[in-house]
Amino acid sequence: MRQPLLHDAEVSLAAPAQIWCRPDGTLSAPIDGLWISDVRILSRVDIAAAGSPIEHISTARISTARTRFTALLPGLDDPSPDPHVLLHRDRTVTVEGLIETLVASNARDDALELSLTLDLGSDLLEMPAVRRGERGAPLPIEVAGATARWGDASVTAFLTVDDGLEVSPTEQGVALTWRAHVPAHGSATASWTVRVDDAAGVVRAPRRRVPLTAPPTGRSALDAWLRVALDDLEALELALPDAPDDVFLAAGGPWFLTLFGRDSIWAARMLLTIDVRIAAGTLKVLARLQGTTTDRTTGERPGGILHELRRGETALSEGLTLPPRYYGTIDATPLWILLLHDAWRAGLPDDEVRGLLPALRSALGWLRAAVPQDGFLAYHDESGHGLANQGWKDSGDSVRWRDGRLAQGPISLCEVQGYAHEAALAAAALLIAFGDPDEAAPWAAWAAQLKARFRDAFWVQDGEGGYPAIALDADGRAVDSLTSNIGHLLGTGLLDAADEARVASLLVDPRLDSGYGLRTMADDSGGFWPLSYHCGSVWAHDTAIAVHGLIRAGFPAEARRLAEGLVAAAEGFGWRMPELFSGAADGAPVPYPAACHPQAWSAAAAVEVRAALAPGTDPVASPT
Image (cartoon, rainbow, N blue to C red; front, side):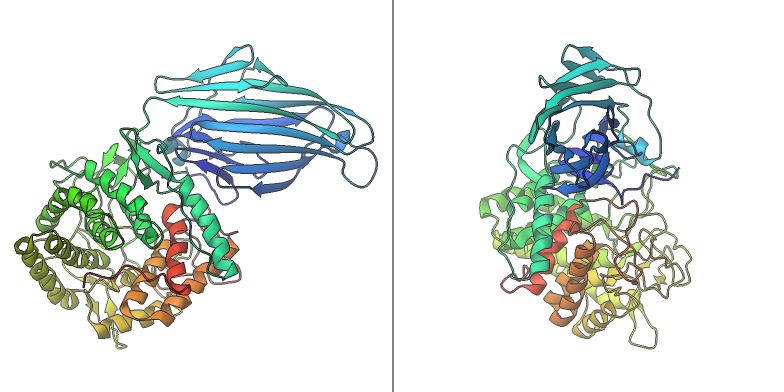
C-alpha cells in the first residue's frame, strides 16, 4: 500500500508531539492522529451536534502549535439569512499532548441549548506502520469519572475534562458529551486535555527552546515566509533525554520528527547567519552518538556521524529495515566537520569548539578510511536491508543515467566529493587555529589531490561546455544525467573558476530552473518525472544550497533568480514550504502529495534566501 497523503491535511506541532487532521479538525484519514514520538495516541476524533449538522467554514493557523477551526450550526440557528450560531474549536498541541477548547457563540436574541458529542479513539500504531499504509485496531480506554486512561508498556495517555464535559466509554473508545446553555448574545466554553507519559522516547522537548528571530528585510513576501519558517523551526526543536540543553532540529513531520544527521546539520548550517545555538547543540548531540565500532547491520564505522535515530526498528517498503540507530549516510560526517568550522567562524566560543576537537579527529579518521588512495568517497549498503542510496537523494531510483537507466553501485556522488574537499580544508583551518599545524598540513594536501582527480573522472562532455556527472558508478563511469547535485559543488573549492561559471549557467537553465526552484533532474532526461521524489521534483533546501554556493562563488544574479523562485513557491504554499513539490512549471506550484510539512531544511531555506535577497546577511566564508 502507498503511504498516506499529506497535501490536504492540517498539522499542529510542538516536537515531539504533532496532530494531523482534516481541515475541519476531525481525525479520520490514515495519517490523522495525535502523535507523541512516533506513537499515535489518538487515531480518531469525530464531532456531532444534536439537531444540527456542523458545517466547517474556516481553519486558521494561529501558530505552528495552535489551530482554530470554525463551523456553523445551522440547525440551531434562527431563520434569518446571516449565520448566528458558531462553534469554534481552539486546538493547541503541547510537547506532551493537546488542549482543545470548545466555544459556542450565539448571536440570536434568545438562548439555546447545545448538546455536542466528541468521539475519541486510539490504536497506538507506530509511525512506520502508518507510513506503510497499515490500519490499526481500536484500543480499549479505561474511564474513571471525568478522566480516562489508555496505553501500553511504553506510553500512557491521560484524558481530563473540565466540569462542562461528561466522559463515557464506547465500543470504539470514549465519548465526551457537552450539554451547554448558551445565552442570547453570549457564549459557552468547555475544554479537554490529553497528556502523555512516554517512557521509551529517544527524543524529548528541550529544557528551553531557542528563540529564532531575524530583522525584517522590508520585502513583504520574504518577511511573511520568514515569520512562518522561524515559528516552524522553533516548534521542531528537540533534545536527547539525557542532554536536554543541547538543542537540535527534528527533520520534519510527520515521518521524520526525530534526529537526522544530514537534515539536522544542513538546517543548523543555514541558520548560522541568525543564531549559532542550534548548530552548537547539533554538533554536540551528533558527537555523543558518533560511531565507535564497525557494524555492517547498522552501517556504523568509527568516527561516522549518525543518519537516523528511532525508538525502534523501522520497517519500510521494498524490504528496507533500519535499526534504531542507523549510520547509513555518506555525507553526514563531512557535513558535521563543515558545520563545526562554520559555527566557529559564526561565533561558537573557542572552549566549545575545543571540546569538539576529539570528535573532529574521529570524523577525519572516518574520512581517511572511507576514501581509497586515488579514489573517491563512495557508499554501498552491506547489510542488504539498508538504504541503497546514501546521499541526500536516498530513494532507490535517484541515481540514473541520462537515458533513464539506474546506475549500479557502489556509487560516488559528485556533491559528496565537494563536501569532502571543503571538509578537509575546514578541518585544516580548525587544527591550525587550535594549535596543531603539523596535523593540518596533510589535510590540505589530501584536498588538493582530490581536486586534481575530480574533473577527469566526473566531467561529462556535451559539446556545450560539459557539466559534472551526478555520480560515478561501480565501474567508475560518469553517470551522465544533469541534476541539481551540481549546485552543491559551488563554493566548496573543488571546481576551478571556469567550471563554476559553467555550473552557475546551468542552474538557471530552464531544464533545471522550474521558476519555483531547481528541479532535481533536468526535464530532458529519460528518468525525469515532475512528481518523482528525487528525479524531477523541487526541494527548497536543495535550491537554497545552490543559492548559498552561487553567492560564495560570485554569481549573485543567478542566486537572486533562484531565491526569488523559492519566495514565489512559498507564497503558493501559504508560506509553509513543504519538503518537496512538483517540478512542473505550469501556473501555481503543485504539491507532492506525501511531502512532509513543516520540514526543517525547507523552513531554514528562508534564511538562506534572506542572505541572497537582503543586505548584510552574507554567508560564512569558505575555508578555501
